Amino acid sequence: MNTLVLSAEDKNKESAYELLKNGEIVAIPTETVYGLAANGLNVSAVKKIFEAKGRPQDNPLILHISSIDMLKEIAAYIPPIALRLADTFWPGPLTMIFPKRAVIPSETCGGLDTVAVRMPNNRFTLSLIEKCGFPLAAPSANTSGLPSPTAAKHVYEDMKGKIPLIIDGGECKFGVESTVITFENDERLRILRPGGVTAEMLREYANVVIDDGVLMKIDPDIKVLSPGMKYKHYSPKADVFILNGSTENIIAFLSDRDSSLKIAYLGYGNESLGGNIITVPYGETSEEQAEHLFSGLRMCDELECDEVYVRMPEKKGMGLAVYNRLLRSAGFRVIEL
Ligand code: AMP
Ligand code: MG
Image 1 (cartoon, rainbow, N blue to C red):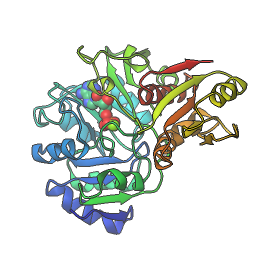
Image 2 (cartoon, rainbow, N blue to C red):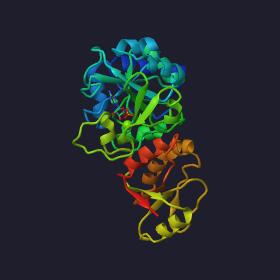
Image 3 (cartoon, protein in one colour):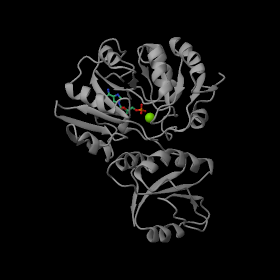
C-alpha cells in the first residue's frame, strides 16, 4: 500500500473523510501525540487499527469526539462532574471513562463494558470528526511497544505501507498521551494514566486518587482497570535506564561504563557530559521534557545507541506523566546514584 502524507489544511479534509467513511485508517494530528484513526463504530475498521499497530486485542481504544451531543450517543451515563470537567478541559488532553452504549462494538473497547472518550484540541482533527459524524477510535499511531509519535515522520517510520494516509499537522504540543480518568462517584475520580491535565488541576474539581498502576509494575496476569498499563511500552531498541542523582554522580557513573558501547544521555538542559556520551537534551521543565521525551528516545534509535540513560523527572504536575512513560520505557529500572 502506498502511504500518502498530506498537510493538515482544509483542502485535504475531504481525502481523509472519504477514507474514514469507507472504513479505512488515517493517521491524524492531535495536541498530545499522533493518532491512528478509524470509525470507532465500525468493527472491521477498528480491527485494522489493531492489526496495523500490532496492538493486543484486550487493550481498548479511546473514542475521539467533536461535541457533547456525540458523547451522549456513545455514553450510557454521564455523571454531572464529567460535564463540569468537559466544560473546563475539553477540547484538551483529558480522557474520561463512561459506561458504554450498545452502538459501540465490543472490539473497540477491548471487551469492556465501558468506553474512553476525549475531545482533542486540534482544529483540523476536530472539524474532520464533525464532518464524519461518527467518533474516531484513535490510539497512538506507533507500532505497539515503540515510543509514541509526536511528528508525522515518526508515524511514517512505523506505518509506511500499512495505512493509506497520514495528515501532517506539525509537532505535537504536549508530546505525551492524554490523562485517563475514571469516576468512582460524583466527588471522586481516579487517574489511570497521567497526562497534560494534571492531578493538581483536577483537584480543583474533585477528590483525586492516583491509581497504583501509574508508578508501579503491573503483574501481567492480574485484572487491571486500564489494560494499557500492563504492556511494555514506549521503548526504543536500546536499553533504557533512569538515573536518580546529581550531575556529578551521573558523570562519574557514566564515565565508568564500557567505552565500546554507544551511550546516550537525556539530561535536563545544557548538561554536557563530554567523552563518548551523546547528550540529547530533553528540557528543563516537565512540560519541555514531556514534549521531547518520545522524539528523544526515537533519536537514540536513529543514532543506533546501545544504552540510553535518562535523568529522573519530577513526580508532580506534568512530571508525573513523564515519569509514568519513562518507567515503562525503562522496564522500571531506576539506578540510585
Ligand atoms: P492509547 O490510545 O494507545 O493512548 O491508549 C489508550 C489508553 O486508555 C490505554 O492505556 C487503555 O488501557 C486506556 N483505556 C481505553 N479505554 C479504556 C476503558 N474503557 N477503561 C479503562 N482504560 C481504558
Ligand atoms: Mg499508545
